[in-house]
Structures are given as structure tokens and as C-alpha cells.
Length: 73
Image 1 (cartoon, rainbow, N blue to C red):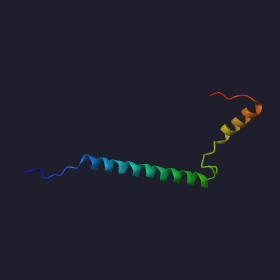
Image 2 (cartoon, rainbow, N blue to C red):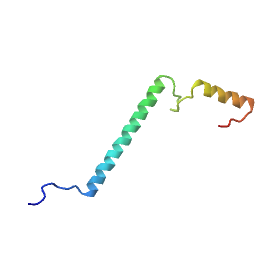
Image 3 (cartoon, rainbow, N blue to C red):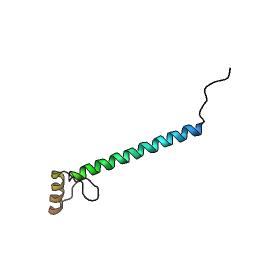
Image 4 (tube, rainbow, N blue to C red):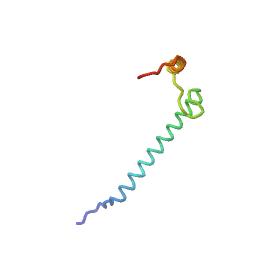
């Protein structure tokens, strides 16, 4: 008797994989957007969507610039 199970073509498998990858990337973008919005509501993100640095690091950068020294990591 012939094989009862139909096999998917490689093109169909590739299309399904690409679709799955696109959906995962879209979900990641949505999650990132939600995270930025949540931080923005808490007042942690500036208007460009960039997270503000925590207090001590920002103060160190200002002190270094005002004293004329260059910071090295």
C-alpha cells in the first residue's frame, strides 16, 4: 500500500519558518515598545525614547567635563 502521509514541500516549510520568524520579530518589537512606554510613564525615558542614566553616572560625566579631564574606561 502507498504511503498515506503526505509530505510538505521544502518551499512550504521555508515559508512557514519565515512567517514564524517574522511573527517573533514583530512580537519582540511590540514588547520593546511596551517596555519603553512603561518606562516613559515612570519618567525614566526622555522624549527621544532613550533611557536616562542613573544619577551617579550622569553626575560623574558632568564633573569630568567641567574639570577638563578625559574619562577612560
